[in-house]
Length: 366
Image (cartoon, rainbow, N blue to C red; front, side, top):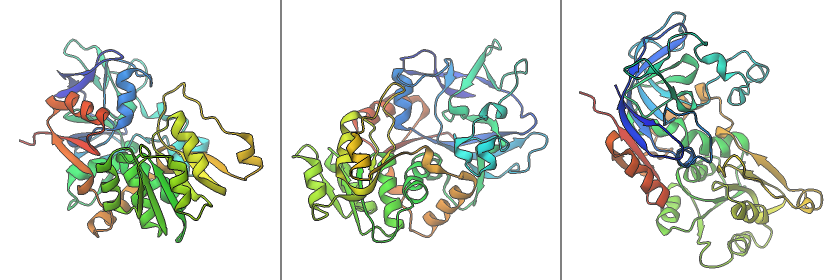
């Protein structure tokens, strides 16, 4: 099978021919239909988030189950599925609390030392699957707790972006923040994740949703999916502009979908006394968040991290499919380009420039 392989960090991807093993106990073999290109992959490509080359990149994928191993009960051959990097063991203390997205024993979903690798080169050398998915490949061999079955009338190409962008963004608004009808919301950074935070806020009935982004096209797209207002941070002080929209009080919920030190500070400053700021964007493994103590004890603000939208993806993703099919969740509008696997580096270059909301690799289905 063909796959986009990262052979060194920093680096670009190389399309290579790999071998995929047959599914073992608890494993699922999936024929990949589509895979999204996520901004967090850029941190892997540039080395600010560690990987273990050689590894197949990509963690946002959809496809059709071809075969299952012994003991698999969640899916069956022929099922249409979405993969999620929130693969969970189901047995650790956090899984048993229902916080599967924070599973502390994901290694239990992998093959043990000494077993044949799931992916390998022609010479038998092992190849990894980034985020335990490896979505940029014609086949996925994953644990059954990494996929969920969905309705077969759901288009699988757009379903791919549910695997990360939608689950993280909509989940941040609905699960982590638990936005209530009438709340005010600001989203700093309107890429794939930020646009879905905007959607989540709309779905929860937020009274005002302010999109903050340097690019006019992304601010316009944010309005399409639910923003009531937009602010260009390059045209003046974004904190003053956002605060003015709420009568000088500040915003109930502010999401930093960028993750830079400057946007962290801006998001916290936009937050009203007693409100909450959420760090969603990845700033790299060594990045820090500076929080003035007075913002906490003097103004009662809260700062929360958001990991994968606090998802229980086996329940959440089928709900997102229903919302899309009902016309309430916008996915087609978020897909900027459909590309071939061979063009994956160009796709990431466009993502780095900010030219796209989401590009998806669509695999040949002959």
